[in-house]
Length: 312
Image (cartoon, rainbow, N blue to C red; front, side, top):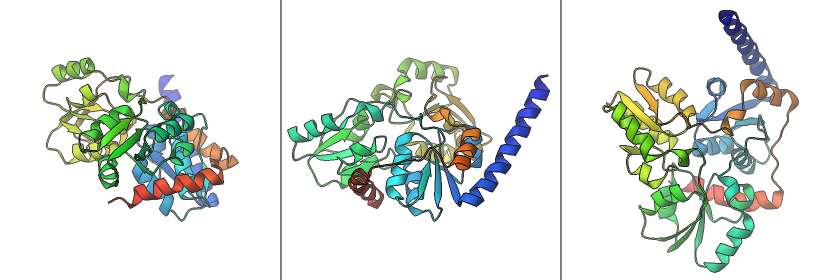
């Protein structure tokens, strides 16, 4: 019975992939998938990447339709950078708790208390917050962005853990918002030390969205893309991974002979995982749900994103 069920599922997947190929051609569509998506989505994506790469692809594409397989703020960023494109998200419930931890009123109040400060906002934020921002960043370019800003004071929103990490690379005063990623912040020193004891030959690679005391334990600290690159190029054959478990797809693809142990079974973002292959097909069939950003918000938010893309 189990074998029959697996065979049926495989057949359904084949049918969905065939339907998707037809729809992509009809809609002149591309599929952008974040590294934290389910394997079945990353398999069919035209581009897999972190927030920075996918923002670049959205800005550059000639496609008429962008299916953004990620969370809502990522779809917003794509729409802001490609306003004439139709941007779809497979499930509009795919939100980001960290992005919801900062609000416009609170940010405006902070800006009024620090009028000389530049606002640097992590891309994991709403369009409305980006519209109140001088420049955005991702975990891949956060340090370069901070160093590029011509101000002695930085208001940093919304991730306090990434803000703490970045602060170590600058002498600028950083006023850090108290937000965090529910998934990365869950990883504890105890979790990591237990894994290190179990796998003493493994290197610990960690995302800077984790708590500072966890980041300190890292043999390598970097964005999702940087972690994947490091593991691929390293001579080490075994890794303990301190980021969301969807990253495993690309890690295994790039380094099939290496072994990856996720630091805890709880490194799973439920919001990223609400998308699936069936929903990707359905959103292209119905051309819904579409991402919409009010023009007055998009115009201001686009400046902060474009400044980010210009930092080399």
